[in-house]
Amino acid sequence: MVGLCAFALVLALVEQVVLEGMEANVKRGSRVYESRHHLILGWCVSQRDLEVVRKILQQICVAYAPEGGTKVVVLTQRSKLEMEGIFWRCLPAAKRYGTRLIFRQGSPLVPSDLKMVGANRAVSTVIVSDQSRNAAEADAQAVRCAILLDELDLECLAEQNAALTKSHSNHSKSHTTGSSNARAPALPPHDEAATSSSQLLDMSVVGRQVVVELKTSNALPLLKYACSNRTVALPTSQLNAQRVRSNGVALPQACTASMYRT
Image 1 (cartoon, helix red, strand yellow):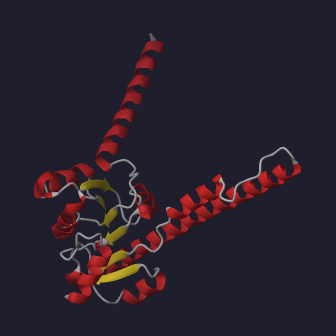
Image 2 (cartoon, rainbow, N blue to C red; image 1 turned 90 degrees about the horizontal axis):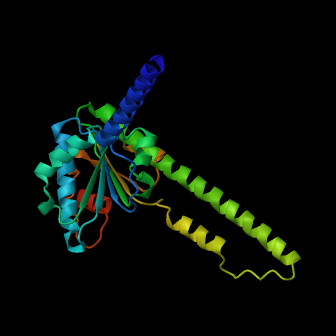
Image 3 (tube, rainbow, N blue to C red; image 1 turned 45 degrees about the horizontal axis):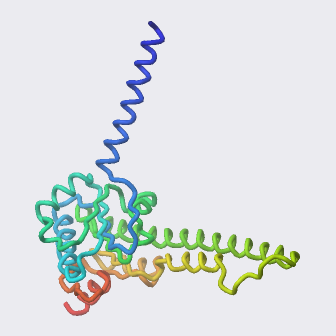
């Protein structure tokens, strides 16, 4: 009898853990495996943040309509289900023109959350400022997020360099072994190791532009000093995607162009 009660207790605990994990996965979202997608990072605590994200998403959908749509990943602190409900009402499927919207819950200041949304594989990234905070705090958050994106790319490059070094080492060993064996076939100029190395290099996204919304110009010197050249600052009053064109121009480039045309 005691054993049966203990088994029932363990079964109930396991069931509770599994259900909690599934519920958290549904609310937060799983890891994103997309590549060359547009990425929007924000907090969306205030209604103004939601409105900015809605305008950007709307213009992306219109811009990529002739191409059958694109992929956009949005990371905010709101739950995945809440964001899906909000944008299903304000941006229904008929107005998305084939664009796939992927929502995830997390913080733009947590490296694991940035990895979850594939920040190192995004073709463009927009950091939307947190309007619920004062100008100094919001700009500090945005700059910190941009620095984290650069650090994530450096980490990916380090992993790629380690893989390249390992492949070259294996290639050298196999070449040495083949030279000592007369019956071993000669290696072609472009072997499998070189092919895999080129594939790793093609996955690099260093150089992709990152647009950072800043409330004031006080954080601009720090942004230029601490971040890479791909990072572009944009004032809050000029952050929009109304000039995104449908000829394949990346979102940050279009936003940058609007800054000079406004």
